[in-house]
Amino acid sequence: MEWPKVSVICTVFKHEPYLRQCFDGFVMQKTNFPIEVLVNDDCSPDGSAVIMREYETKYPEIFRCVYQKENQYSKGLYPWWEVLFPMAKGEYIAICEGDDYWTDPYKLQKQVDWLDAHKDYVACFHNAVVQCGEHRGLFNPLNENHYPTVEDIITRHWFIATASLVYRNVLKEYPSWRNEIVSEDYLLELLLAKEGKFYYMDDVMSVYRVEGQGVSTAMNADKPKMYEGLIFLMTQMKEWYEDLCTESFDKAVAGYQKEKAISEKELYYATHPIARAFRPKTYKRAIKRWLRNIANRW
Image (cartoon, rainbow, N blue to C red):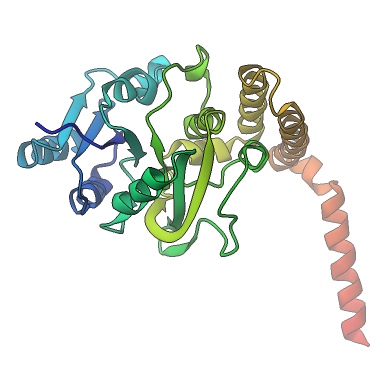
């Protein structure tokens, strides 16, 4: 069996409605090199495992699947670090969660060709579609920088769609605190940025699906906790980078601390009806309505 050039990493949990579309995006890839698809099902209570076995049987030369008997995430273990990354044989790694999917059959070929030609770059990502129900939009703006710096990756938070990322399989060690981080994709990007440069392609080649079950959705539901997690991540990464990018990490922490304070205030007003009635925004809106009513009378 020929050694794979690219290892595709896919984590699955309750993704039955989307999984065929995700897997078909892998199977349709047209490349001049072999790939492997590594899938971990975290003990899904739906039919995800059935679909995985179907594709594993149909494409045994591509799919290698792991079926967890107990949910690992609930134990504080992330399948990326503990299961799938150690299995990867490829020179490059590509990621696509089970509810996202690829739309361009030449996605992997384009990104690998670019990275093969630019040895000083560690990763390549591209634009994507964000899909929320019937609503669709672009993940990155039309004027996105093609050459983001490590400072951009530290301070801009999340501007790399996870399903768009292809990177060199260069990470040989991960922080001992990795499983304490909820934003594992952001942690991965920060680890890679320490190893080399990133390149951005304008091509729209994947879809990021927002359907209300993902980790990012859960994080946005509790924004103070989300920002607390990001502050922890940046504090830990500052030590990981040693004396590199200190100012950027300090800037990121300060920004998240400010956003955390704002979100805590918003949460307080949202959960206390009496306080909401006396919040400054309430008075401002009331005054604006009063002024509009006076103006309309004239």
